[in-house]
Structures are given as structure tokens and as C-alpha cells.
Image 1 (cartoon, one colour):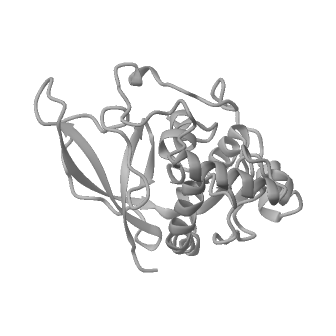
Image 2 (cartoon, one colour):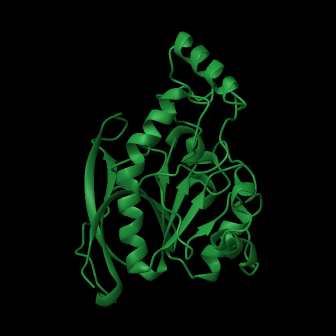
Image 3 (cartoon, one colour):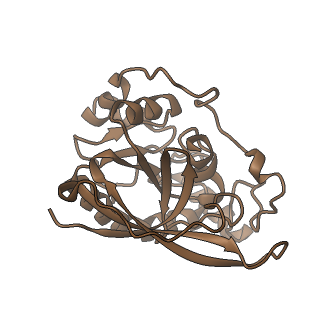
Length: 262
């Protein structure tokens, strides 16, 4: 099995490290970052037959009390069989038309990435929130439901998490109060009218994951923080990657998002 290299922005979480694929997502500096001064030691490869080379990007301040950062890289070798990818809210439709456009642009390349990881033995977890009814009988949905309960469920893992204590001094460059909508008002109104004509709720029109992303029988489907935590524990997952939209909202805040995984 040949090694593959992926670039990611890293989030340290003790013995488990999470990453978002940098092609699609980037995390805000100062909120999730490796400790300053980490050495760029060469990667080790404990299992050459199931190895995944990952180039982790992190940021360190240029100087103390200076709001500028150096972007550095740190290479690691991960056991791909102990790696999971969570696909966050890549819905078929969205209340923001710009979000639909982003999904359609990201999905083909994302699907290639998921297929590459799946072929090497990684666990792919599809998490289209509020859409579980569409997959009630899918083997991947049943896998998530039937995963044995973990004994170490964190408190509140089933809920949105809007802030971490480490974020209290951070000023986000994006206003999150409106749900992350960036459409022009006139275009948004036209889009909502079109959704109504389609019989969809303009504020929550999603019913399933984008058909541009393949869901294999060996994958898992869940929007539950508890179920996903159970899956990760049962598979002894050491590394979790998140892909999807949008970083400032769902990818950060969902029960299976970056904050809860931290």
C-alpha cells in the first residue's frame, strides 16, 4: 500500500490529534494552535503498511504581544486504520445560496479525498445534521446506532458548543451572529422564494447529504455527538479530521465539531 501525503491544520487534543484538511478549511490563529516553539522533528512510521503521511500546519507569534504569526509545518506518520474523517453538513441544499455553491465546488475534490482514505482503511463518518431520516435503513446509519456505548462520554457531548475558554480573548474576523450568511440581500430573498417553490423550508431546506459525496456501506452516518464519540472509542481512533462547511459555524460548534472534539 503506497503512502499518501495530505496537508492539514492541526488541533492538539492531548493523546488524540484532530485536523481539518487545509485545502478546504483553515482555523483561526490563536484559538486552536500547537504550542509555540514545537520542534519540527522528522516523522516516525510505526506501521509502514498502514501509514498516512500528514503535513500539519501550525502558527506561532512573530513576537510576544504581536498580532502576526509565522506559519510552520510539522510532518507526522499516522496509522490510517486509527484515523477517522468527519464530513460536516455537506447538505444537498442550504438557506444560503453561496453555501450551496461552495458545497458544489468542494464536493468533487472532497469525494476523491474520502475515497483515498477509505481505500486505506480510515473510518469515514458522514454527518449531515438533521437528515438522519433519509438514511434510516442505510448500513452506515445502523453502524453508528449500534456502536457500543463508550464509558468516557464527555459532559455535554450531545450539544452545540459555542465558545471555549481559550477563545475568550479572540476577536473573530467573521460575524457569526447571522449564521454565517454572506449572500447579497436581494439574491438571498430570491433564493428563499425559489426554495419555497420547491417545497423546502427556506431557513432549513436540507434533507440529506449532497449526492456528490459517495456514502459506502462500510462508512458511518450520524449527526449525534454521542454516537460519533462511541464510534471513535470503539475503533480506538487516534486522529480525527473534519471536512465540510462552514468553519466559523458548524465545523466549530456542532456536537461532533472541533470544540467538542477538543
